[in-house]
Image 1 (spheres, rainbow, N blue to C red):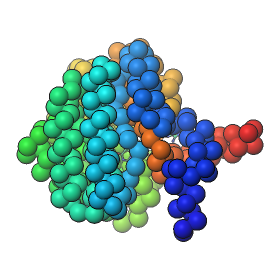
Image 2 (cartoon, rainbow, N blue to C red):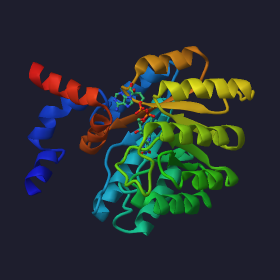
Image 3 (cartoon, rainbow, N blue to C red):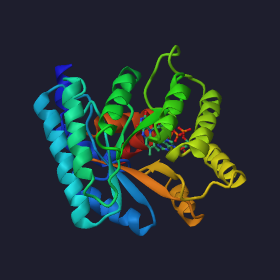
Image 4 (cartoon, rainbow, N blue to C red):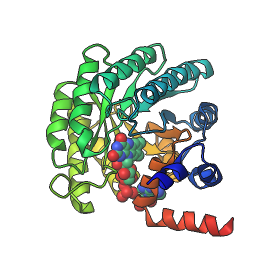
Length: 297
Ligand SMILES: Cc1cc2nc3c(=O)[nH]c(=O)nc-3n(C[C@H](O)[C@H](O)[C@H](O)COP(=O)(O)OP(=O)(O)OC[C@H]3O[C@@H](n4cnc5c(N)ncnc54)[C@H](O)[C@@H]3O)c2cc1C
């Protein structure tokens, strides 16, 4: 384990040498790299949400440094005048150390974000063990700062209840399928069922929710959403499609051309291994792309 930890440490020469593989999914290692990527997205008619990569932090100091990075990032967004908000992970803000630490850090970020043109702070959803704590902290922070909202995952069996609670509380939700390997007791495992649940939840959020983020690259879902909003007379500025940086850029541009709002999730930073791993595991062709790049090197 110690060897793996050393290999995957951000400052290790192994990570430095292999960053070129992650570059398709990660905007860069610094906030300034990310700003350049966002300027291009803004020029193409899209907004962004910035994620400073990192998760599963177990040290108080590191969690505070992550908070500070977000505070600087929010100032940089203001200074550069880019159209972007931020996405955070509570395990990067100290959830494993102490729930109060994550709460305080999220409050600081939400307060600072209120100075920005787009003050919204999205709280990413992590593995199922973190769902209750994440929703609890979002609710607590929202009692003081209402510019915060969670992600809900359509693969989890519990999510219909969480969607109804979010609708009742008028919270902005990002709906995604879910990216973690969950047990069958907690999550649907087959794609048709996940798609069906995604559509049902998206329909509830679109008709009764507050400015939902429809986060997917699944063309079947995207087409069904377009049809649904047309049939129900839902305005194109009442929701947004959200996609990941570097994935299906042709769909991103087509949605903008068709008059939909599009937000791109832009990760940056040196802790790219976990994020990169999830993107690789999602798609066989990504693993092949990585192998191909290694062979070409
Ligand atoms: C903006 C955004 C935010 C997200 N936030 C979270 C979060 O907070 N928590 C969480 O658990 N998950 C999150 N996810 C990930 C999500 O849960 C899925 O794992 C991911 O989006 C793949 O599902 P899909 O709906 O795109 O459909 P899929 O059926 O997986 O993909 C549809 C098509 O999109 C393309 N595609 C999808 N993924 C990839 C990829 N990795 N590489 C290349 N092509 C790909 C392929 O062409 C594929 O056929 C987020 C996703 C998005 C778009």
